[in-house]
Image (cartoon, rainbow, N blue to C red; front, top):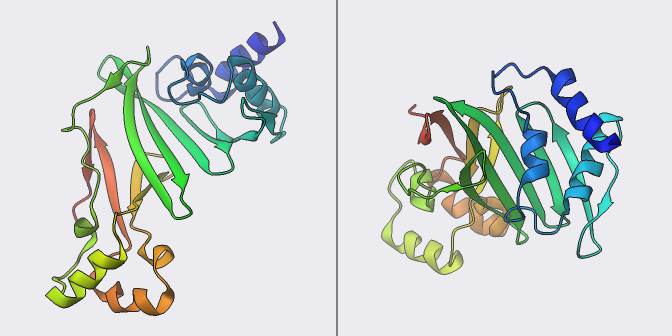
Length: 213
């Protein structure tokens, strides 16, 4: 009963301005385990309890590791599920539907992310047309000489792209390529003039599109 009280209190205190009715904490508590396999429902409710009481206390997850709720408002939350994984959730209204956009980031040790979208019943939107994950080529501002391009392909066998919500309302998604962390400094300087550091995206209904500059 105590945990249910705090969930209800969260809904009232945060006063959702998005007209969604529910809060992201509700969805966090009811997620069936696809995103949070290490956290039981009790774990999640405890994390919300702690946060509401002004405490960022770690809970013990199913692998005996530590998980923490880092940020929370009516529509957005950020959870450190383990020492190497962070999950961000943004709840928004699209037409009459509630959509949850999720970014999972794993440090490998260079951060690498994946983005998925779900409805309020935790059924996934699977169309590839909703969001195109950027490749390293999308960050290029000018054509790279052939020999240098071969060197880059040999040095970076697979791209590691980090995604994160940005902006006051978390309504911007920012992608970074992480080359400066993947390569040693002297090597990165050879490629740096050919790349922009970030790409920004905005929501357009269910679609997530790059911001044109």
